[in-house]
Length: 122
Length: 381
Figure 1: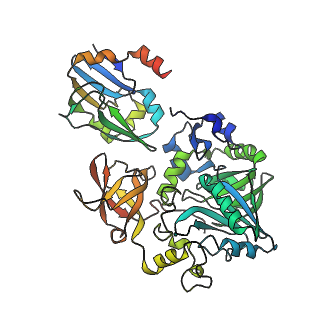
Figure 2: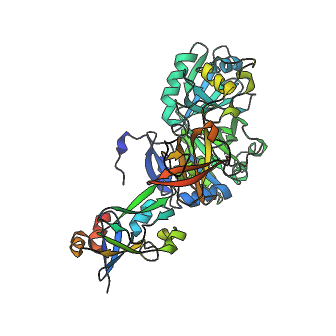
Figure 3: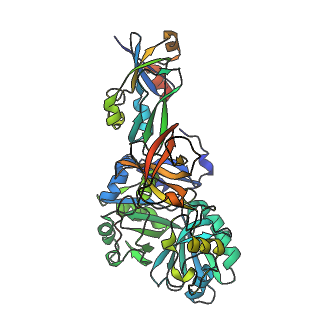
């Protein structure tokens, strides 16, 4: 059973045990426009919560994707690196950025559930 | 969303149309302008190269120079005191690209100058238009009446289908060649039409009375080949075309020679020409022509897919060393599906094929000095 949580910076995390799959929200991709490039973190990298972890670039501009929790990068989405436009077509599905091993589950307490995130972007 | 003071922003005569078309409005040069429409930058860019795009460039300044003597050649001679171009040689019905230079040989603004038979018609950048007008008044008042045309909009129609789209409303359009310019009726409105643009595509720029602008834009947009295009795609199109953006690729610290704009300075104004010099910064600019400049604007292609953007520092090697230059414009070129950039490098490193590196997020990405335009232009010469 996975739970999906959201950050105020428009990342989503699908949590399955102590592993979180991270991407950017559909709202975020709409704001960015056509995504032409993503840069993913190296597998094995230790990320601190709120650290810049990945980059997503539209024709217009580059934006950081932040680590929503502290932990180690377990896997990155090679399909996304090859086809950045997946962010626009399936932001909260196929266009996941990376999986992270959650170091401290208490950090999840500060994140939003779907209803709270909807209110945040309304 | 970026917070901005909506009240202080000016609106063009097409503002309501942009909003009704779903334009995402952003502040640009003091105006509330559409950066994109619902189609998005990528589709807007590709549509312009495949069919036709309509751009609102009404924020740009339109200025008439009326010779007090009644002879357009006198206005041309007067304007030559401010630009290194041969203005006298612009035939009636033609226009030319020019730059206002300063005493250091830098560029105050770049502009288009058209000869309308009895006066000159100038189009200048939005961010510079007040300063340009003051500059003209300070220097040319003895010879010319300087008349800003604040009550006109400017619409660009660009792309391979631009000619057929405009021909439906303006019978004269197909007969015009690249850089022809003059008064023409478009859909019965009293317009000034030039065959020019800022995309590298064939196309037209249409100055129309403000009160007629929305009706004209709607008539053009009735054609299914024509889509509205925002500033985002305008920038990616001009970048692929290798065209300079004032304030970024050229400014008061770059001479026309450093900026690789030698082609825009006619022989008559260079050393040994019939009217050599006589413009601000002529000593420095002519010295650059005669002896070369120490740096040069070049095109840059990346090997990877990561866009290299404005401000990125350039290096000669993969590690160590001081920066040798900087990227002045850069991004993703939708027609090439690859990053493109331009920037300034020392002249010995400006040769085509030179390998350089750009620092992006702490990493040095390999680049190659490449010919511009990046996308072949399709002007109707």
